[in-house]
Image 1 (cartoon, rainbow, N blue to C red):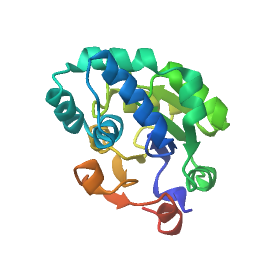
Image 2: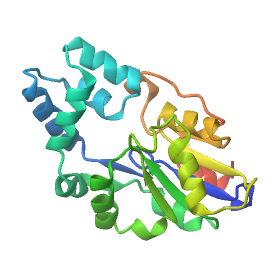
Image 3: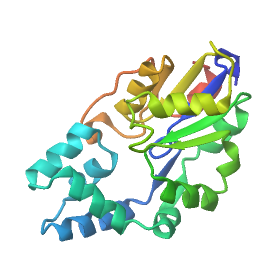
Image 4: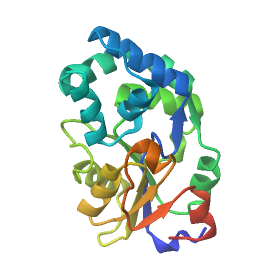
Length: 214
């Protein structure tokens, strides 16, 4: 990789570097649904897990569920041990990250109580020079706040060029709002996700960046 194209790299986590077992998604979402007296189809469960905000909102609206109590229930049901045990790296993740010869940061919506155990179980905590978990305090992508915090913690010189890679439109939006290049990695079919994401570059695998630097 010619990492000289960028002075630093920021990466999303879920759906970009790692994924979880499909059955885990269905089990968690069905448990959440039970609390509200509804059942989610497999497609709806995937939309709630992977989908952009408007797709998630559509599923919740269909079942008459407000977002705040939904996510409260979701976070009560998920435990660090269960999430960590169900998580796995995409095959292209390790070769890509290990080849980057520049500071690397993680900016994720995954909450801190889950992120730490997942990274530790996968043995990848030390891959990152900084880890920022979005919160009400930092802001949520596409807000540039968490991205700007990661850049500050990387302590790169003012004017350094950076890039953010993610699978969600909020990742690209956060990159653009922070003045970075936004690369969308398309891990799932747009037909399955329900939309096609626009970015400065679109890739299907991190291997493409090793072969053809952005």
